[in-house]
Figure 1 (cartoon, rainbow, N blue to C red):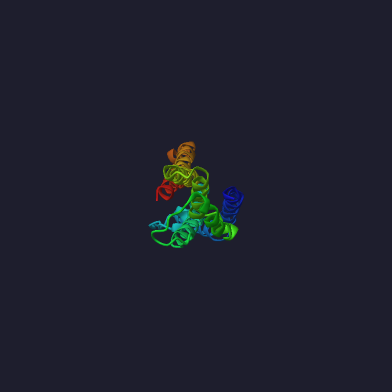
Figure 2 (cartoon, rainbow, N blue to C red; figure 1 turned 90 degrees about the horizontal axis):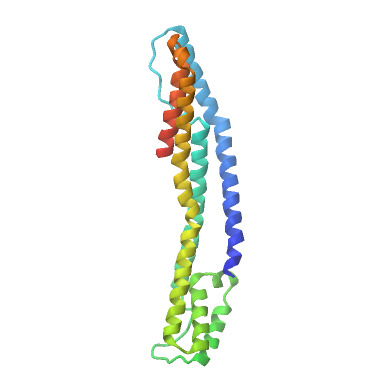
Length: 228
């Protein structure tokens, strides 16, 4: 039953990525890039006219490039994955507060009683049986019914919890990869901007530094957004 969660979680991650791409790209196409281009065009016109002016630091200009867009897409995707994990954790926490096996204090459990206690857990909805506590209890009761050994039951519970911890760690590997990828994308923008600036160095020698400044802006802005 636990394996049935894997396709749904994978589908959620794929849909979350697609939604992040669509929303962020629409925001960039509809607002950020037009606003940034308009401001850069106005500054270029003032510079061409020879008037003295102080360039304004605009958020639209800072985040306008493709590297920053990719960083925001990955950030939203990581937040969606962590939100799913937080929701699953709340379900697990709520299940821990429930008394799934009605056993009064001082009652002696025998191996032949394990099957009766298992029925109460098996009667739970499938979504609840998929949580850690019911799965662990069923595993422990099954081991107790088979072996009648308390140490064997303790070992079964420990193994189940260790497996769950390893599974959760592997499921969060995508978030760790995203946290590594975002700064890397920023550094790609840095290399691209510096490369463009060097390609326009001859214009700076001729007195036109606008292309160099724009390219250096790409380099520094992408690094700034990625690191923040």
